[in-house]
Structures are given as C-alpha cells and as structure tokens.
Image 1 (cartoon, rainbow over the protein chains, first blue to last red):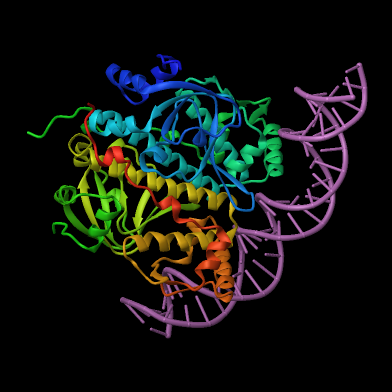
Image 2: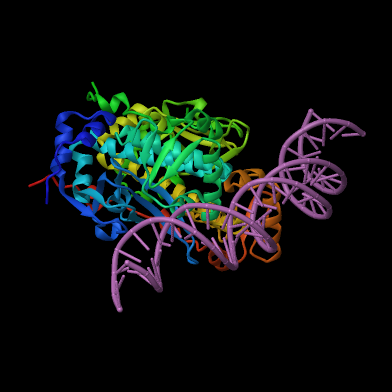
Length: 249
Length: 249
DNA sequence: CGGCACGTTGACGTTTTTCAATAGCCGTGG
DNA sequence: CCACGGCTATTGAAAAACGTCAACGTGCCG
C-alpha cells in the first residue's frame, strides 16, 4: 500500500501536461496505492472501478475474435493512463494485460469523476491524454490500412522510441522492448513468420538490431524515410484558455 | 448566420448524453453559427479555432502518405463532433473533408475550453465523445489488422447502421451512404477493385444491396455472424459521480 | 457530341499467409 | 546430471488474398 512518491516519471508527466505542483499533489493524493502486477495479468479484471497509471513495465490492450485471431490495439507504456473509458463511462470493450511485471498506481474512478468539478485543469489533462491516445490509434489505422510490413515495422519502432523517450526510458537510440515477435505480429496485423522475415531483412540492411528484448535503431534517418514518420501526433498542449482561465468579465 | 435551433438531431443527442434542458441551452447558445459546406471542402482549413458539430451530411478524416496513398481513419456523421483535439490542444494531425454537402454548427474553441470551468458535465460529455471516437478507432484497428475484406465490409456497414440509427438516419435496415467505392476502399485499406468484387459477392449472396448511395442490409443476422459485430463499443454513459455530483462532505 | 467520374471485369503479379519442420533456450522432474 | 516439454525464433515451400494494369460500360453534364 505504498503511496506514490515523486519520481523521475512523475516529473516528466508534470512537464508534459504542464501541471502545477499543487496539481501534481492532487494526483499523488488520489493514487491510493501502488500495485505490483506479474507478467500476463489482466488489468481490467484486477480492477474495473479504477483508472491505472502505469509507473513501470509494459502492457497492451487487445481484442480477440471468436476464432482466436488477436489484435493488439495499443501498447501501454510507463506514464500511460488506462481504464479511463471503463471507469468514467462504464464500457470496457477491450482487454488489457501486462506484458512484463508492472508497477501500477491505482486511482479510484470516483475521484477521476470528481476532478471534473474540483480540478478542471486535471480533467482537461485526462481529456488531453484521451485525445493523444486517439491520435496514436489514428496512426495505427494508417499503418494497418496503407503501409506494408516493412513500413509498419519502421513506424512501430520509431513511435515506441518517441514515446519512451518522453518518459525517459531510452538510452540514445536504444530501448528495452520486452515482447515477443508474436506480439509485434498481433499489433501490426501480420503473421509471426512474416514479422520474422521482415525483421531479418531490416537487420541485414543495417536499419536496426532487435534481440533479447532490446532494440537499437541503427539508422533512424532511413527508418523515418521508409515510413514517413512524424512524431507530431504525440504533441499538443492545453489550450491557453484552459491553462490560464479567467472568468468572463 | 442562423442560430442552431432544437431539432430531432439535438433531441437525440440530448438523450444520448443525458443532458438537461439547461445544458442543451448552453450548447445552443455557444453554437454561434450554422454553416453550409459544399461537398469536397476541408473542415479544418475552414476553421481550426472552432469545434464543428455536424448537423447533416457526411465527412471523413484522413491522412495521405507521401506517395499519395490515402487512409480514411473515420467517417464523421450527423451528431458527431470534430476538431476537438485541434482546438483544445493545438494539434491537428489529419485532414477532415466533407463527402456531401454538409450543415455544420460551429462552436468557438475558447468556449469549449470554458466548459471545463463552467459546465463540468458538458466537459465530461466532450470527453465522453472523445472516448467513443477512441472506441471506434479501436474497432477499426481490429478490422484492418485481423479481418479480411468481406469481414471488414460487413463490419463497416453494420457500424454505420448502428451509428446512423442512434441519430435517426436509418429506415429499417436501409440508409443513405453517399460515398464512392473508392472511399470505402480507402477506409478499409483495400483497393477499389477488391472492394468492387467483394461487394459483388456479398450482393450475390443476398447479404446486402448497395447502389445509388443507398445501402440495404438484407440479412443483418448473417452479416453480424460474418464479422462478429457487436455495437457495445458505441455504448457508455456518464459515470454516476459525474452525472449527479455532490461535494465532499 | 465529348468528356468525366464512377463502376465493372479479366488477366496477371506481389505480398502475405499457412503449413511444416528445425533449432535454441530454459525450467522441471527424475 | 540429463531428458523432456514448452515457448520462441527461424527457414523453406506452396497457397491464398489482395493489388495492379488495362479495358470497357454507363450515366451525367456542359
């Protein structure tokens, strides 16, 4: 039942969402406990009344079709919030599962609801996070709809690098990516075999290294060229009228 | 410069988001003008400071890759809000274009921002709409990643039916779908030719009719079986603690 | 009448999947 | 210690799904 303390991650989030010290404190007070989850556990089943802020580890959201085909719709990385829709609006239309051991800070859905009345800027920050998720899904749709295997792969590795960089989880052009090729396949809408072959080609061309749960982007410039990557969709800040509110004259 | 008046559509939205008469009035007061847009116009370029509530007509959001490939990420139907991310958070990472003549009600982004301070429940309604969009994108990712052409098509036609039904734009199992096969292809990540052939097969099997901008779902049960359709992702209501707020004791 | 946008169809190519087999790694139990 | 199973990565060969190219029809509009 540890309290969530300030940490490098919290500091990054504070900057990212332009939060004041007081607002950070509100969040910290709401996070009623930090939970350790083992790899392979369901985040929703564990708690559908709560919103989870991932502090460490990877998770993924996915859907499974009736015949067993699986599509991973997004990866959940440190600093990401998950379960907002389930706890605020009572619908959970996908599953969420940890891909590694995770450290997760839980926030009562009721408290998130209260934010809309008691901390408008934090409510806006939630909306901001939700809109950012939407932008990532939009990019994912573009990848699956119009990019080939090689381009999808390049895009995925670059986007993960951008996201992890923001929260301080990369070293230069390398980062830990603790998932199997099967997960990559299920994320990119490809077969395992094809992922393996595409990876092999890209390795041979000196584009990247990928082994032991570690990625090194050897030639990020060429990777960006391959898929036309642009991290713009991860940007965005609070509207000045939300950031600095002044009541109507 | 017509004021937005109450209309069947507004009534449906009121029910959908569980708004009070007062809240509806707030929205109506904010909608400073209704604009008529011709087919093929850009919604963003027309106004990036504003949020647009589509009252009538179809639009779509899309991205174009450097070599011209296009992916439509979502269709914007009557009752949908668009431009929230652009006007609240200052990022616009896709284009929006009308597919038919459209009647659009504009709301100043500043006013949306104010809602977070002055009308928490409406701010929550915005977040709700954003989360719903997220759920539709999630389904789209599943379709593009793991469903074949036939399944994607079935899913698209069923989802459009559900969405249009909610806002009162269907008659039984039929609805107007004023777009070309090229748009369907760009939405489903397929080639025009393949869309045409798949459509032909489905027609021949008595699954649906599709001509003259009109769709008739002839065998919706079988269509649902084909793709495992479930309208659950369109559901969801405000959390009771947002709906009926009581200050902390 | 001609041009244009859209739908339709056939023939052929490419990407990606599926099936099947092999190899390495790792933990477990004998 | 070693054998074994289970999971992951890797590779080859064949098949399926889907894309491209090209042609033609049809309705609409100037």
